[in-house]
Image (cartoon, rainbow, N blue to C red; front, side, top):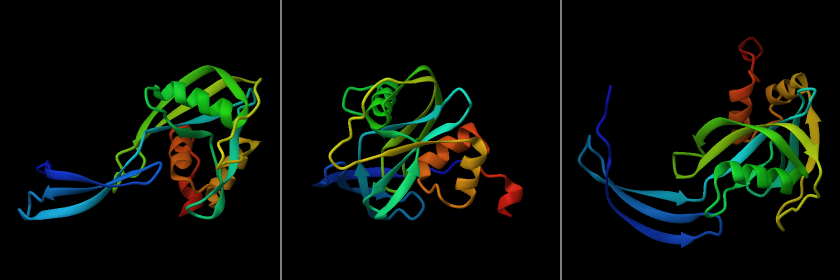
Length: 185
């Protein structure tokens, strides 16, 4: 089943919101032939990393998130800088947030951050053969605590709703079956 694409009639810049740029898009709804106005946020893509130690435990970070005003348990990651490749950003973020480097990397795929109103994508990676050889280098608005979780601890945390960051859930679900259907229903 194929629906016609919505035609972009015009787009106008609204505001620079530091990590996002807001715009209004005017689109033609191909079904009703009516013009609609929507808000969209532009941002750089981001990269995150599922870090595995030799025992198969996953390195998680805990940090305060301003939107939820709560601490969030998630995997390391962050925005890709202009001119930077996704893997390069993942490696940089891993060092900055945890002090770890990795010799082995695998791409897990890419998702949209939130296609409802954003253009940014999240690039998921797996890092193995790790070494804690650097100091952390936090941005002014972050401070992270790290802890390794076994797969069973990770599944339990996810099933108990202790992992709520959608990008983390997406990456972990791509690598592991963190939600066993029998435990949810």
